[in-house]
Image 1 (cartoon, rainbow, N blue to C red):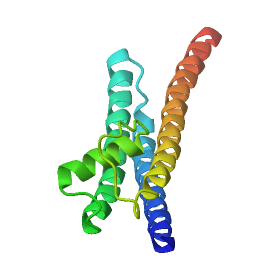
Image 2 (cartoon, rainbow, N blue to C red):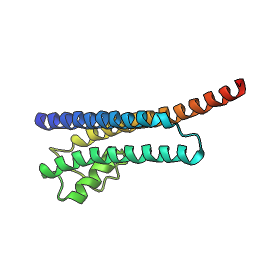
Image 3 (cartoon, helix red, strand yellow):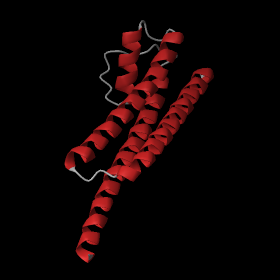
Image 4 (tube, one colour):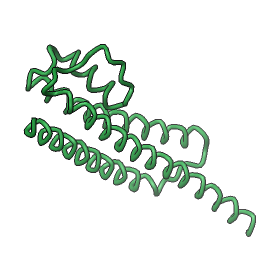
Amino acid sequence: MPSNILFAWGLAASTVIVHAVGIALMLRALNRWARTYPTILWAISWRLVWVACYLLLLHLAEISIWAAFYLWQKCLPDLETALYFSGVTYATIGYGEVVMAKPWRLLAPIEGLTGILMCGLSTGIFFAMVNHIYQMAHTETNDDHKS
């Protein structure tokens, strides 16, 4: 059992690293686009859709890491079940129709807690982006009134 907890911590650390690198790459891309600040509704909407899709793909990659581990350790019978279990656990939905055997079941709460943290981080990033767009629009409006 202690080795299972070490595996769980390693998976959690891998998830955080993937998320941090993914967000850093996303912010680098957004920084390049900052020169072309979107001012019209469709451009703002497109940028928000792009960020949401990017973050979803990042979460799916992280879910896949856990699912690959479950397959490697034969905790779950096939890829579909491993991806399903990992996704439901990571997103803390917890339907409960798929469960792991007793020696491995302690991984699920750690994956769930990791998923909560990563989803919270993504929510914060998304909120910061919306706030940035609002601040830029507000600054432009104030600059127009000063002229």
